[in-house]
Image: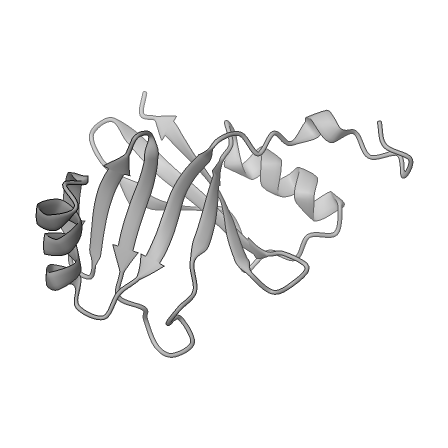
Length: 132
């Protein structure tokens, strides 16, 4: 418990899950990271490319609209995105929207909830839920 009465064990911003890196040309960027740097390529979908950097996922992304150039996003892995979202909401964190599914495949759903830090940097809670 902290001096302000907040229980610090309610949210565990576990290991860094993913970093988003803006790029101008997705095919050129994927080729560079895969073929030049030798990063472990996972998959490419439209304007996104994904790599595994020893357990931290790198997402190369062509920014949508304006304002995304030069900005990276830190994605924190949490066991339950809606629960972590509720806890941080209670602490006064302003979210960009509600937790939602951003990807679904035959094994799991990938949930996200985006928010900003005190300096306006975009951060995200991220977690995978197995399909039953």
